[in-house]
Image 1 (cartoon, one colour):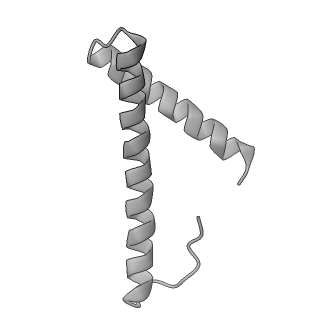
Image 2: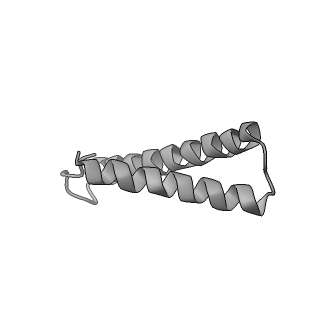
Length: 69
């Protein structure tokens, strides 16, 4: 994968972490780290659901194969 995707993902995680930390009024590094772990877990879950949904559509014959991560 291109470095561009890693940079975009890093900026997305940092922006979501900052926004959620401010919204929930988290101030200590430990609390902010906990929010970051939750953001990363949520993004991994979303990616897994998209990939799993694509595989399911291929297995059911609804979509063509070719979705690569």
